[in-house]
Amino acid sequence: YIESHFFKIEKELKSYIIVEDEIVRLISAEINQELEKVQVLCQNLNFDSAGVIISRATLTLSSLQYSVAVLSATAHEREYIKKAKSLLIEAQSRWKKETSELTSCDPDTGHSILHKCCVSGNFHRIEKIIRLKPDINHQDNFGMSALHHAAAHGHDDCIKLLIHHHAIVDLQDIDGCTALVLAIKAGHSSSVRILVQCGAAKLISDKNGFCAVHHCVLNDRSDLIEEILWGEISPDSKEQCSKVAKLLEHRDFRGFTPLMLAIIHGSLSAGVALLSCGADPRDKDTEGFNSLHLAAKFGAVDMIPLLHSYLKETDCPGGMLGSSALMTACDYGK
Image 1 (tube, rainbow, N blue to C red):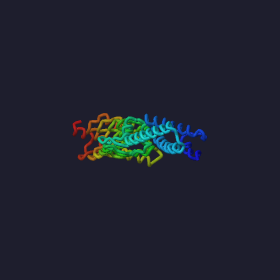
Image 2 (tube, helix red, strand yellow):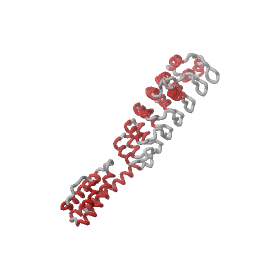
Image 3 (cartoon, rainbow, N blue to C red):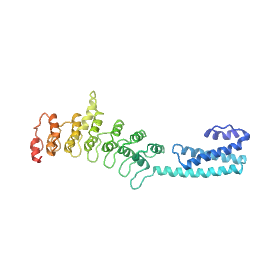
Image 4 (cartoon, one colour):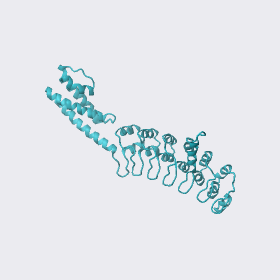
């Protein structure tokens, strides 16, 4: 009976040699051991094992209470049980409070603890929170998920961890921005690379119709333009070349391609990167202007020689009146 009764305790904790004349001493030792564990637990909850320790200690305490009653334990041993029970209640209460806080959100911002940890890049804390199985794709009041925050702050390890635990890569915030776009805006090249490798979509449009390549232009990140496009280019793959063409031809809600946007914003480095990747300077905007006309219209002087080198016909008509680039420059006082 004694061996059978202690079998579960023996298995859950460490192995003990049960000898009949040592039963009472072992009961005290077992309780004391659990007491020490719970004391440590109360002082500093360890999220890797706290839940397991509490569950195990509760079962052990229940078994020991029964055993002590059967074996007529001393007052000293009963006091151990009383303390252990009190500490277990405290530990359970703190554990419940901690786990509740980890899954709660700030009513003003909608930020969860997971969001805040992704902002600061607290990798180990994020690991522990994920073990509690929170809604990893929860969006705050601005539509941002934990992955958005990790990408915006360039925390690469956190990005990988979140995606490994099934974070949605292409979730959009209230502005229509994905995690990839936020990484581009912040200029985090390595984060962009990771998200691209994890299959982040590049053609998703935000509320202005901008795709990932547009955002590279707007933020003057020509190095990221190449990062996104060269990852798609393969001379032996028509499908890959088709994907690149779609990115280069993608238009925002005003009808501008990334190259057109580079010209309007006077971003020479972005223009060079886009043209070298195959952007077509002959494409026209909604008013019928090609890239050279736009350079003339917006006074992008540095872009004109570059565009000339890619255009066979530099006097082609554009706009509603069929004006040349020179005439367009004159019309707009450039």
